[in-house]
Amino acid sequence: MKRRGLWIGLAGLIVAGLAVASAIVYEPSIAPIATPSPDSFDVTLKQEGARIVALGDCVVCHTAKDGKPFAGGLPLHTPFGTIYATNITPDSQTGIGTWSEAAFKRAVRYGIARDGHHLYPAFPYVHFTRMSDHEISAAYAYLMSREPVNVATQRNQLIFPLNFRQFVAFWNVLFLRPGPRNADSTHDVQWNQGKLIVDGLGHCASCHSPLNAIGGEKSGQAFDGGIVDGWEAPALNALGSAAKPWTKAQLVTYLRTGRASEHGAAAGPMLPVTRDLATVPEQDVEAIATYILSLQKAAPPSVAQASQRETTAAEQRGAVLFNASCAQCHGPGSPMQVIGERPTLAFSTAVNASTPRNAVQMMLNGINWHGEDATNYMPAFIDVYDDRQIADLAAYLRGAYSNKPAWRDVESMAAQLRKEDRAQ
Ligand code: HEC
Ligand code: HEC
Ligand code: HEC
Image (tube, rainbow, N blue to C red; front, side):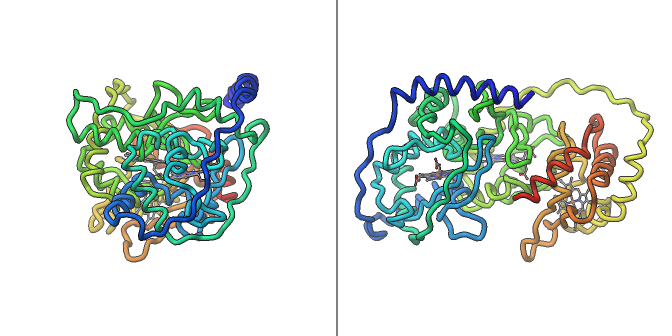
């Protein structure tokens, strides 16, 4: 199903793209400049830039595993192939050292590189386009005063016809609405500030919304939840109907620390986002929380559950494994819950979600050891349990900690995610 939509989408893209591509070839190139000295930028502007760059997660994508910050090389896997984030340090050969501020502004606002080629929308310029001129200047000042790193970016591996960048021109007609927006006078300053960050720099919707066959965010479904790197990014407009509805304080804590005492912890693609949000002023995160909480849809009427239910054989097997490997942390009265004030799994989004995806990812990968903080460590079970055992554990978690219907096909999902995780 999903694949068929993809191919119909691609066929449409080819036809329409050819028409547009023949008309638009390249945007003009912007002349290279001599790399400006870091001292040529105002100190306060550079400091403001640190905040902008953190809100935009620039370092998350533009840094390879074990690579130098901003030197690029991180592979982004899309249904159309692999795109490598580029080097955005001020190196004159391999980075953006010869980019004027005008060239930089055109890239973040219109997705066009200095030499005029279109950038792929894996770079979230459809969101960054909302940045104000001042924010763009600040980000530029900050990036141009980083350490230059000489590393060439790997070539992208994309399928035909998307390996032709001109097709992005057509994509932009559909999905790019360039430029900042005016504030909404029916809401207060904090709400507007939150909306500006969430829709712009924070590009929250790029992960938390479903994508269509050509990789654009489905219209009218912003924040309905999406899939990114094998994880589910939960709906942000249903936080009010969680097992324990999110409060503003919990949301601020989660966004700034990666965990919330009544919900659980970020361990997947959200974790680096929270690390960046930990460095920005708290008012920014409060504004984000205010705006996100204003997006809540009414909860669907809850379906009455049969109160007496036989436990299945899978749940019984899962219960044994849970006692062997999980109860010391997740069981009632465990040090993690008593001393660490960690929540019961009953409030976990992963355990209550409609698919077992994040619960399985959590079991396979755990949460890495981050130095001193022993209450935020979970071992990875990828080498401990096979797919059926993971499915049994999932069946137990779902039965014991949630009153939602049992998940289906967990074993095949475990097999698929295990394969993807091993490939990373
Ligand atoms: C979700 C991942 C992601 C994030 C977040 C991101 N980028 Fe990028 N960026 C990319 C990718 C991928 C490319 C390369 C696109 C291509 O090759 O077509 C890119 C390209 C660029 C380019 C063009 C560089 C060149 O040499 O062509 C600039 C400038 C840039 N990004 C700046 C930023 C800034 C500033 C931020 C933060 C505000 C940021 N990026 C955040 C993924 C990201
Ligand atoms: C050493 C302690 C430890 C062990 C053992 C452990 N976990 Fe965890 N687990 C954690 C921590 C810490 C978190 C992050 C959530 C938090 O901080 O409350 C977590 C989170 C989870 C979550 C997601 C909850 C959420 O939404 O954040 C699931 C599901 C989970 N664990 C299942 C398991 C299962 C199943 C096992 C056994 C196979 C297991 N865990 C073993 C410590 C542990
Ligand atoms: C790179 C993709 C990505 C971006 C960008 C992103 N998120 Fe997330 N988010 C996720 C994923 C995936 C999860 C699931 C938890 C995990 O990763 O461990 C998540 C979890 C969350 C949760 C917990 C939801 C729940 O029901 O448990 C909240 C709240 C959240 N994100 C808010 C935001 C906000 C606000 C922004 C923008 C500032 C944002 N996210 C940007 C991918 C992303």
